[in-house]
Image 1 (cartoon, rainbow, N blue to C red):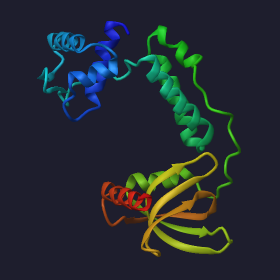
Image 2 (image 1 turned 90 degrees about the horizontal axis):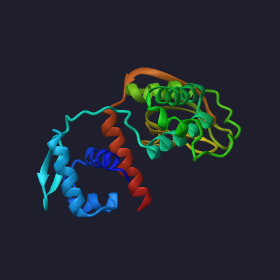
Image 3 (image 1 turned 135 degrees about the vertical axis):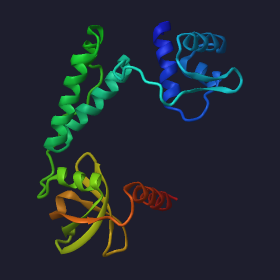
Image 4 (image 1 turned 135 degrees about the horizontal axis):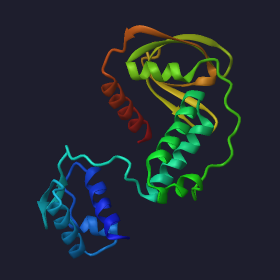
Length: 229
């Protein structure tokens, strides 16, 4: 790894951590010696990168530190490409177009030497399968989630029985062949998974969900962990 890339990677490692990162942990991830880490961190501090801490205690990057957001490594570009390819081929039209726009925006701003990793990435996803036949626009479900609004659903079970539910949407999950709306169901008084291809009709209500989206997401995670244990 070139020294310039290593310095950049040290900043990236510190950016993703909210706790001090030791020189040993940095050395292990970068596959260098701790002495090299000490020297590199000292150089970064000398370049006025706001790193706090010292050898033996760990290092923290000031939370308000800013750097050009698209100084990407080849691995980071290919990670984005892999995700964008999957989304473009398996999501609804709005997200598919957004994924392609992301690729175009990255290609327009990265240095010339990195553009081959976009034009000819070494990663890829298998061919697109048939999209599920849905009667509801997934974009409207995502909008309700973002805005913290309740949904009124007309839902058809696997046996073909229809019911009407008022739900508090949490997240829209994308699988290989299906999409699932995770929501708190007022009728069942619990979290439920609704296959979007079985949602006959969805109406976004003016009524906000009973808690903040963050709290609802926290409760869902606890419910999911309890089910898994």
